[in-house]
Each structure stands twice: as structure tokens, then as C-alpha cells.
Image (cartoon, rainbow, N blue to C red; front, side, top):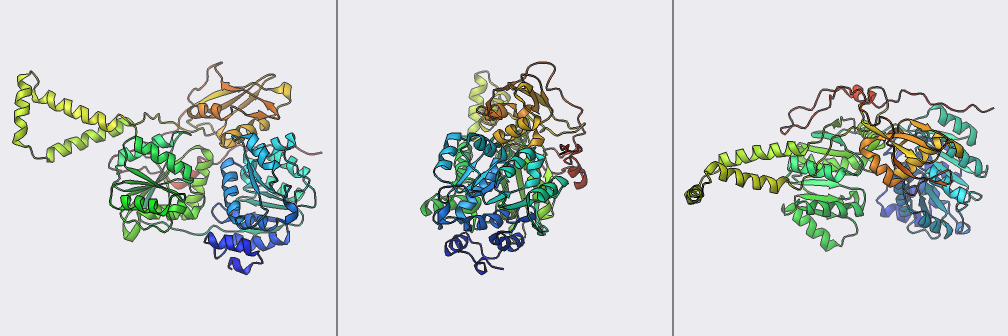
Length: 573
């Protein structure tokens, strides 16, 4: 079924056509007509099946001239990244429709800017539960006129401890609303929300499309948040691809990453949608003729370009759609050639997203340890030995050695000095990178952890879900990235991954919990940050010939990430 068969306004059809959408996905085909009718819907669908368009198109279509000054659609997402992505896509659908104003509200961003957007009359609000609750308390977001509420990835929001916030928000919205829920799984908690807050919902279940990616070896690396650029530099230095593509999700990230690579001596060029055609042509020509060995690009900018001979694809950011992943890595496996794809991930949320991609493409994406500076130096030495052994000596150089010998410097010392200088030139800019394990709950997690202290406690009527929700909202991490929470009378301690504590403290600089401004510091009391019992490190290690990558079965890999702790829910009397 095509989009032009729907009873949509010309403005929306024009936007959909400009985006290149023609035929609807299964979730879109089944849910959009129901949502346009105002029905409550429960959609069970995995990431990458087109959910955002499924609820975003009806949301935009529902806006009328009477909605110019108040919020009428509320979309709740589990993380700020998803809120930003949904906001960006919905804006594209609303490009030609007058009167549609969106606002993304999430932690870690300017509260003043969000308040300004809400006051100027945003009618579609996309946000995380924690920040939405914050705006409700401030009365900068009023729910009186909300007629449609959408819960995107509801199971993930419950996993992150947002159930009370979600129920509080739903209880404050008028009962004659349309309630829409999308979730990859349907645990009991989801069904309870469905029964309590929806009216005669239509249930839609979509199976993930089957995809296979042949001839492409796929690997991923777990790195601490904020260290992806350093990790990418190490990988580029280690594998030295003669031609590589690096994919980012935003234009700003393309510009920033390209600058960082250029500063470190890599021949890189950036490509994104804001560039003029003449700039795009220059960049593509430099990449095709090998003047630039690395092309950093967004998915949209890379559409339609035909480049052969790409040695490797690097996913700096996980793609926003599973289908994009196939398009990306397909750049390196063309015309029957083999290729390699590497993906960088940070945090448990991205690990789960990667697992969803793995299921979608029906191919294994293997974990590898990141090469460190010592690995790369060892490789450089091997390369020098090979290069010198294959080179022809010129007689014009012997007199240099004779003159050095007269100065008391023999040929061994002379060669050592030259090689040392070359080695330093090629490796001095490489970042030092501590190999770390992310926090994984369980007895044999192997994570190195520490604690942070928050200056709020039991005397302010604080509960663990308040703490967890605020941390998730401020950092963009998931609830599963945090460990034990201990609440005392005047303070709270939280177990966090040691490799990420600085990022967490920086991200929570302006954090509020239940309306209280709080201060977050590294906790220094007691014996903290001790290493738990490690499980055997059976993931494949960096090998300069990439001859072996370990023998873990996929079932064993998945078992590492299955939570073994049951959720506790309050009984209602």
C-alpha cells in the first residue's frame, strides 16, 4: 500500500514524497489508518520497522488551526537520543503544513530554551518522562488540551524505572484522549498499563523483516562514553584501510570528527547535507582519487553515491534505522568482494540496539577488544622490518654512514635513531586508551565500578526510581548502566561504571531530582571501585592478521544480557 492511497492532506503527502517514501512498511500500513480514525493502538514492533512514521504522520495530520497555542500531542521516549530523532523526523513530515510546532524536552539540555519553545506554542511535545515531569511541576507544560499521547518503546521506559512517571503523566491527561503504545515486547507491566489507560485498543503485531548480509565480516567494540573518537583513531591506525567510510548521525558530528581526524594526521573529508553541490563534488572526487582516504558522512549525504573499493566501514554512531545499517556496511561488500564493518558502541542501551540489528539482519556481529598503543607500535615495527628488508640500498648513502662512524656513531646507532624518529612521528598522536568493561549486573559481571554521591536523601522523600530516572534523563544512559542505589537520611550513593564516572558527573551538573537542585560528586568513603570476579575473557582479541576471533556461540553472547532480577511492583489497594 502506498502513502498516496491514504486520506492525507496534500501538505503531508508532499513532505512524504520529498523524503522518498512511497510504499508503507507493515507497521505503518496497519497502524496509520487506525490512528487517523482516533483509535487506541498497541503496536508490537522491533526497532527499524518504521514506527516513528507510523505515529508521527497521524500526529502531524491531527494538528488544526485551533491548536496553534497549546500542546495537543505528547510523545514519550525512553532516551534523549530517541526524543531528538523522533523530533527531527516529525519536523520533516510537518515541513509543508502550517501551524505545526514541535518541541523536544529531555535532560542534559537547556531548560530555558525548552521553556521558550513551549511558551511560543508548541503543539507536539516529544520528551523523556523525567524532563516532562519536570516541566509539569514547573507548570511550563500543561496537559489540559492533550488529546493524543504516544508511548514509544514502552518496555524500555519501564526497564529504566519510569513506570511511576508514566502513570502520573497519564493520570493527569484528560480521559477522552487517544492512547498509543509501541513496544518490542509485551511484559505484564505493559499489559497492565494497556488495561488501565487504553480504551478498546487494537493490537498489532509485526514480525521483523528477514535480511542477510553476505561477504561482510562484522565486528563491534565497546568503549567508554566520550572515547569513541580516540577508539576510531586507534582502529584507523591499526588497520590502515586505504579507503574507509565513517558514518555519523548528525552533520555537526561529521564536521567535528573530520576536524579531529585531520588534526591527528589522517587524510579525511566530511560529507553532509548542508554542503553546497560544488563542495560535495570536490569531496567525492578527493575520496575517489585517494587524496582523502577516509570519508566521514551522514546517511542522507551518502545516499546515491557509488564508490567502489572501500576497504572498511566504521559506524561511529549506531544508525537510526536498521535498514540504514544494511546500506552502510554494503558499501564495503560490493560486486562479490568481501568487506569489513566495525561498529563503536557505548553503554547498555546501544548494546541492545546492536543486538536488535543483529536479529534484523540474521548475521553475527562479533565483539573484539580494541587494539592499544602497544599493539600498534608492534605492528609499525613489523612493517619497518618488512619495508627495509624489501628495499634496495643505494651506494650514495654509504658515505653518510662513513662520516657518522668517524663521529663515533656506528651504523646500528644511526639506524636506531632514524627508526625511532619515524616511529615517534607515526605513533606520538595516538591516544592512550584504557581497556574497560561496561557495568553489567550479575555476580560475574567483570565490571570495574565506583560510586557517586548525591546530596539528597530520605529526608526529602526520595525513592530509588527518582534517583534512577534523573540520572538516566541527565546522562542519556539506561537504568541498567547503573548499579546499587543506597539512600541515607541526607545523601544517596549510586554504583556506576568507573570508566564513565567523570562523564556522569559532568552531565549531572544542573540535574534536579523531584524539583530539588542536587550536587553529584565522586564518593571517596570505604573501599570502592573494587574489581568483581571476572568471567573468562573469551571475546576475540586484536590480532594484526585477524586470524582468529573467538568461538563464542551466539546463545552464550545473548545470555550475558538477560536480566536475572525480577521487577517489583507496588500492589494497589
